Image (cartoon, rainbow, N blue to C red; front, side, top):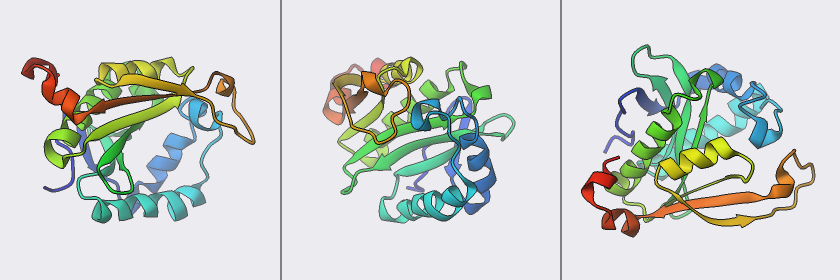
Amino acid sequence: MDGVPPATGRLLLRRLTIADVDALVELDSDPEVMRFLTGGVATPLATVRDEQLPKLLAQYDRHPGLGRWAALDRGTGDFLGWLALDPSVDGTEAELGYRLRRSAWGRGLATEGSRALVRYAFDRVGVRRVWAETMAVNDRSRRVLAKAGLRHVRTFHLQWDDPIPGTEHGEVEYEVRADAVQERPAALRAR
């Protein structure tokens, strides 16, 4: 296994590299992209370059088949954002994640990529559970998770020192388990 999920109809996935720093900083500088993560505050270059990216690159060796991948437009090669299966400590579970440029929104790309990652996680990597969390008020992300086959399992509230708008409504967790996917008819598993 090369540790990279297969391409989808419209997306090509590849490992992140140090050369992606500028694209990642640009992605995180859009207040709408960061709205439900930081309240719209950009991630500083030094944080991406010196903290986040080195940690992500190290995961590829520690947890083969899991991690975060650059999402490229399959036709143009343009950087659209990233998709992730962030590993649990023991690598038996993965947290589904995605962050796309605003220009990629509303085209079904997050759903397409998420469905592909869920299949990859179970069929190729062998995790037992894929899960995701988002703010309860993040309706777009919640729709993506549902369309990708995850189901809502709980709503919970966290305490934040500097809460962002919507925090008062809580966070939601979604999941899909390997045994639930195996029980579905083949036509549903391939979606």
